[in-house]
Amino acid sequence: MTKPPLLTDRTAQIARRARATREGLFLHEDAAAEIEERLSEVNKTFTAPAIVTGFPDPWGKILPNAKIVRDDEVIDLDPQAHDLVIHAFGLHCANDPVGQLVQCRRALKPDGFFLGVAFGGQTLAELRAALAEAEIATTGGLSPRVLPMGEIRDMGGLLQRAGFALPVADSALKTVLYRDAFHLMHDLRTMGETNVLTSRLRSFSRRSVFAEATRIYAENFSQGDRVRASFEMIYLGGWAPHESQQKPLKPGSAQMRLADALAAAQLDGPASPAKSDKSQPESGDEGQGNKGQDS
Image (tube, rainbow, N blue to C red; front, side, top):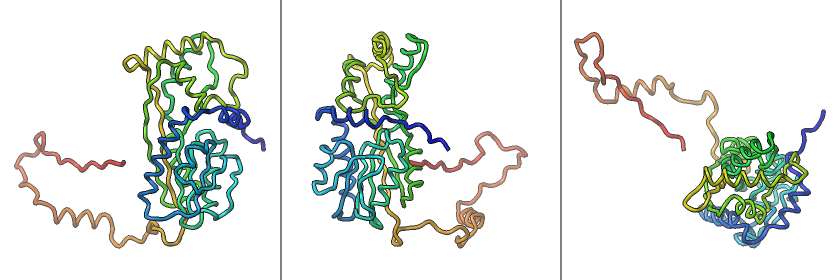
C-alpha cells in the first residue's frame, strides 16, 4: 500500500522557523498568555509539565520548569511522565495531527491535562483569496501557497479520535493591520510561517503575481489606510482518561421515557386556552417552540 504524500516539507519548515524573530512571535505571546490564564482556572497543581512547540522562547516563560520538546513526527516524551502537556502552534502544519495528539495523550499520567493551540481555518483568509485570484489572472493557473487549516469542529473531532476524555474546543479570531500585503508577507517570514507545503512551487513566482495580489488585497480588505489579516487561534483541551472522571450514561439507563417526561411537563404547564368555535385557527394562534443555542 502506497503511503500518502507528506503535507509539509519538514526540512524547509525547520529552516524557516530558525529565521523567525522575536518581533514575529507576537501571536505566540498572546496565545501563551491565554493558556496561562486557562491554567489558572483549573483546580489542579501541575508538577511535571511538558510543552511541544517549534518556538520555545515565548512558551518557556509561562512554565519555567516545563520540559520543552520540538513537534517532531515522533515527540520526545516518555509515556505517562507528565501531568500537563501543551501543544503550541504545531498541529496546523503537522503531517499527522492525530498522531501528535495521541503521543501527547500517551505522555500524560491518568487524569493529566492537555491544552493545545493551533491556527484555524479562517487564518489568512484574505491572503488566500487575493493570491488565488491574482495567480489565476496572471498565469492562468493556481499553485499551493497556504497550508490547509482545520475548522473548529474538525479539530474537536481530532481530540476524540486521539482518545481524550471531556474534549473541548473553542476559537478566537485576531485581526492584525498591515501597511499592505507585502508587509504581511514579510511578517509571515519573521513568524517562520511561510510556505512549506511539499507540493509548493520550487521556482520563483513572477513578481507580477504579488503585485496583482497586493492590488486585490487593498481593494477588498482595506480598513482605513491599512489592510487587515485574520488569524484564528483554536484552543483545544482534554484529559487523559481516569476512572474518577464523569462519564456519559450508558444507553438504556434512563429512568423515564422522553414521551412520559414531556407529558408530565405539559400537564404541569399553564392551562390551555379555551377552544374557539371556529373550525380554522386565526393567524397568530400557533404556538412557538423554545429555541436552543449551542455555543
